[in-house]
Image (cartoon, rainbow, N blue to C red; front, side, top):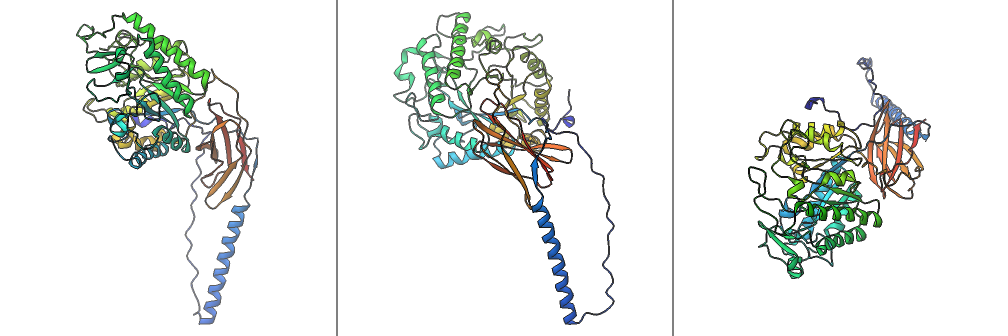
Length: 527
């Protein structure tokens, strides 16, 4: 197990590192002045010194400006790849907005702060909740405005939060994955609902379970309506991903023998319920791919498929039986582009993070980017959990088994609060370089064209610019210092230039498309 102090600094794009020899320079004293300066002689000497210094500065400026970069056959290492995501929940105002009914300007300022924090941490994906309970955090003709945003179900917040989020995130090179709950109608059946909410327009399709009001997944109307809502967003918004969570059926309370204390009131068997959910997941994936194949479909199930699997793992909730979630099947059958099982336990526990992640990554060919419980740092829920525990878990997501690496933080609020210093550690070490989101070679391997780039040195650094590439959604810029390559920028398709820190001896620009496929780099070396 990696120690906290032994963690790598990130998925490096560096080549060999070279330690420059320390050079010592002897201090030199000015020569002694052997004669007094007359006013006229002193002015002349002073002017001469000024002219000499000015000439030297001019020569340095001309040299710096004259430093040119030209196309090179040098090949940098591949651009770093990692899915660095975080969930942002609006239900109960967990992450955003901080409370219901804030003004549009205040909500937008809070969302900008979240995206600015992500950008400063070199993160690249926000999983943004848009449908917490058959409502909408966007302009919809199918469902009412969410009360978690405006304060009252059905009342507009005065702008379109999803459109705003996409625009601001894309400007920062961050993906937006629209997060839906498929079947929850209300988290509390006593919650006030607008006249156009499903609980009032289709009351016959509702089921009461504990405090919840639930759309019955056995109903073809429920499944059809959920898919219709999702595809409406896929068609109308420039999202990068569609994401669903683990609430296929509501969580029951559990007896000591593992049996549920409450049974969902539909008269169906667990096997029948799984068939409904399986069919929905398969149909959802197919519908998204037919409409916009580059939109990633992600699912975040409960972190343990079934109690006792893998061997030695315990769990009170049986997601396979209680929630009708055969998530291993969805991964194995390729009905998602990534799976984010909620692995919220410690490395050393009966629900071992290491054991579970190893098992999940052996169940299919698609990426498994686990959810990690950053929110439990210093919490009463898990006393004593440190930022070091979380960093060790993130390190394991980079080293265990196969496929592209990545992880998702629960939740963004923890990173905004910098719990236990976690954000400082991520910025300083773990996310030291930007990274592209991994590709989806099962959907497309066609690479975009190589950018036409140019570079020139200036007093502020090296200005790198390029011509737009058809089909590109992002550009990654790398720079070499000595023998070390590092990724300095990942920017959105609208950007055509960046400034890398001074001293770069070579630069490279790579284009990436919506599938994550990358071009050959355009490489320029200093002459």
